[in-house]
Length: 286
Image (cartoon, rainbow, N blue to C red; front, side, top):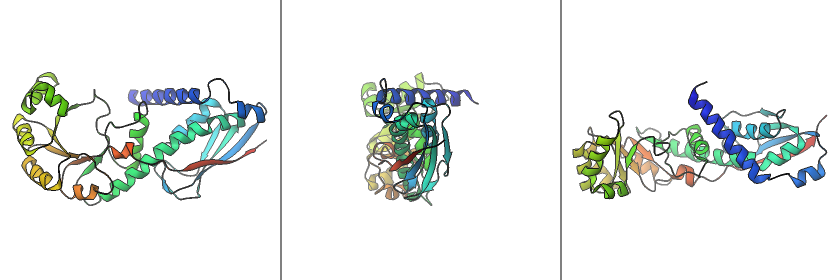
């Protein structure tokens, strides 16, 4: 297993455990009141809406952190599309653990599946175009690993993961540096030569400055379609292009037809509704 994969697993466990501690500070009074210690049971995970599944591993891990003998049998795979009413999985183990972990496990699974579902729809709207869809850093604090993973399950890519990942000069960086050319020059001087330099531009004048200064990627931010056409024509062959700013399901196809290399959309993570799933029919087993 690669080092980054081990790190991600440990991070997932840390977040899941902290979330469980938030929900169970010292005991689950309701579960402990009605279920005898060590009683075992089985429950069914059922889809209450149609969508794309993401986070099945997180769902299962939540229960195993509470009960090392918990077993989750999946009838669907990660990334599968599920229909309303379909059986997704069965959870078997300590009944107190199932009851105590239910909400945390579902919160992760519903959130991640909702993102994957929204992303899958958006990716399909780009069908036939050369444009690739990526996410942003507009994620839930401390849940970025989960949410960006769900974006990948949905079929899109990840933009930079964090501020250490790459150079992206936005409007405030430009202001702090004293201008577009100054910001790019400073980044070239500071960043290793293997790093690409991306800069956000809002006008054709800024774009021309960025291209002349040698930007590797230009983010065309909140430009209307007519301006985007001109900007993409100017940047062709000189820099990679990214369209950004208020991109949603309703307008993404219009932007894709303009021919940019990338479209970034914060909506993939900040506006995706959950996929409704439910853990039902808990019953004792021998």
